[in-house]
Image (cartoon, rainbow, N blue to C red; front, side, top):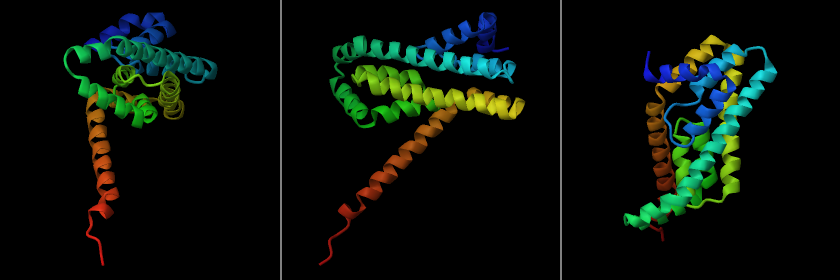
Length: 202
């Protein structure tokens, strides 16, 4: 049994309260995804729609609240640390990136294997407006955890095994997703600049 499973089992007796704690702290700093607690609870609650909805609300709300704490930490101390260590130019770029892709970036992190907490810190350091940050987080996290609940309800054990495989390979999948998005971005830039780079015709 791995350390993650041992840690999860130690808290499993607390039910939805443990789900809240895992989801809340994962969105700030700790590395164990709440899905490891949430998904087995969904399997046990199969057929009990009110309980499934309650678990979905607990994991979604606590995750967004945790990421909001990460946002406040980044806002309070992140910028000062970057200035202290002479990284003002990176802070400026971070703010420009957040201004351009803020809500979409938060949504992408909330729904994908990309660590949600990192975008929370970044949004705080870049002083992204809180309202779109929270709304994007609720939509993204709600879709992610809701999708898992629907899969478990429709496909049962097969969905459980598939989701657990994704969680076991989360870092690899996040890296692949980042590479694909980077490639798409460069391809888009190349396509949009094609006319500007081509010689003019008389």
